[in-house]
Amino acid sequence: MADAKIYTERVLENLQKRNPHEPEYIQAVREVLLSLNWVIEEHPEYQDHALLERMVEPDRMIGFKVVWQDDAGRVQVNRGYRIQFNQAIGPYKGGLRFHPSVNPSVLKFLGFEQTFKNALTGLPMGGGKGGSDFDPKGKSDAEIMRFCQSFMLELYRHIGSETDVPAGDIGVGAREVGYLFGMYKKIRNEHVGVLTGKGLSYGGSLARTEATGYGALYIIRQILEDRGDSLEGKTIALSGSGNVAIYACEKAHDLGAKILTMSDSSGYVYDSQGIDLDLIKEIKLEKRDRIHTYLEKRPEAQFFAGQKPWQVKVDIAIPAATQNEEDLEDAKQLVENATPYYFEASNMSTTEAAVNYLLDHKVLVGPSKAINAGGVAVSGLEMSQNASHVAWSFKEVDKKLEEIMAGIYKNISEAAQDYAGSKDALIVGANIAGFKRVAQAMLEQGYVF
Ligand code: NDP
Image 1 (cartoon, rainbow, N blue to C red):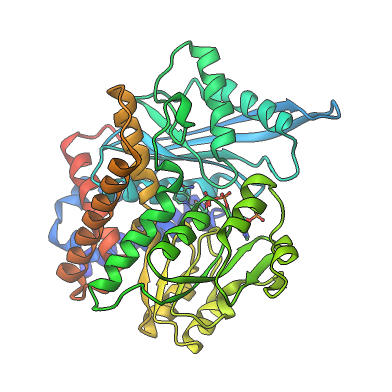
Image 2: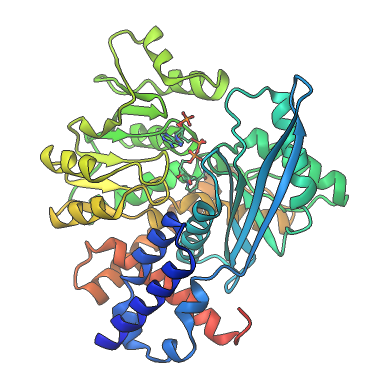
C-alpha cells in the first residue's frame, strides 16, 4: 500500500503545482485519487504506464470568445469552452453550463468527474464538459437565441455525433439545446445526434428531461431497500429548483416521500405540507421567476432569504443545485439533526471537509457520480435512438433507466465491499468501479492519450 500511496500523492502534488489556481479541479481529482490506493496496489503496472498522470490531464481544452448583440444593440463578449477530457470508452459526452462562475477549473472538475460517471453507466461514452460565463438570468428569448447561435458558430468545429456530444447542465435546458442544435444544422446541413436533451419533435428522447431526477430517486430507493429501509413516509430536504431538483421532487412524491424544501440562489422555501410541485413548475419552467414567489400562492410556507435548506430536520438531504453547496457548517447541522442519509444529486455537492465530517459521523453518503448518472445514461439512450432512427416509448426508456441505476448500485456497492470492506463506502465504490473501466480501456489502446 505504501508504494501506491506514494504514487497517488506524487501525481496529486504535481497536479497542484501545475494548476495552482484551479481549486475545484484539484478537489475532484483528489477525491478520486485518494480512493484508489487499493486498486493501484493490486495493479502495479498502472504506475509503469503512467496511467494516473495521463488520466488527470484532459485530452484537449478548447477556449474561444463568443461575441453577440443584446436587445439594446450593445455588443457583448463572453468566454466559451469545451473540455474534451477522456475518450477511452467512447465519444466525449457531457453537458454545457451557462453560468457566470464557469471557468477552466470548474469545467475540468466536471469533465474529470463525467469520465467516471459515464463509465459507471456501462454505456460507451467518454467524458467532456463545456459552457460559458454567460448569465442567462434576465435575458430575453432573443438574446438567448443570439448567444446560443454565436456559441455554436465556434463549437461546431469540435463536436460530432461520433466525436463529442454535448447536452444541457446549469443554465442550459431544452430551449438552449434547441437553439444550439438549430445553428449546428444550419452550419453543417446534417440532422444527427450531435446534442442530447433535444426536443421530442426533432430527435429528443422521451424521459430525458426527467432522467437525472428520476434516476437519483431510483438509486436512492435501492440504497435504502438494501438496508431494510424504504422511501415511504421519509421527509427530504432538497436544494435547487432546476431540472434535476424538479424531477427528483416529482419521483420522490411518486415513491411516497415528502419533499419539504426547494431553493434557488436567493434562498429556500420550507413547506411543512410538502412542496407543491405544480407551483414550482409554474414559477421555474413557465415564468422563470424567483422561488420566493411560491409564498404568493402558498402563504403558509416560509421563505428563508440567503439561506440553505440544511437546517431543516429531515430523514434525507439531497443537494441538487451546484458544487460545494454543502460546507462543514452545513454538515455539522445535518449531524446535529441526526439526518442518516445524504445523497448528492448536484455534481461534487460537498466540500472535502464536509464529506469527511459526514463520514466520520456515520451518515450514509451517496456520491454524485452515481446518484446523478441517470441523466447521462438517458443521453446515451438518446444517442442510440438517433443512430438507429427509432424512438422508444417513455415506459421503455424509464425502464432502461431503472435497470441502469440498479446496475450502477450493484457495481459500486460491490466495489465498496471488495476494496473498502463495507458496502456503505459508496464514494470509494463509485470511484473504483468507474476508474477500473476507464483504466482498462486506456491500457488496451496504447500511449495515445
Ligand atoms: P438548472 O440550471 O436547471 O438549475 C440549477 C438550480 O441550482 C437552480 O435552482 C439555481 O438557482 C441553483 N443554483 C445554481 N447555481 C447556484 C449557486 N451558485 N448557488 C445556489 N444555487 C445555485 O441546473 P440542473 O438542475 O440541470 O443542474 C443542477 C446540478 O445537477 C448541477 O450540479 C449539474 O451539474 C448537475 N447535473 C445535471 C444534470 C442534468 O441532466 N441537467 C445531469 C447530472 C448532473 P438560480 O436559478 O437562482 O441560479
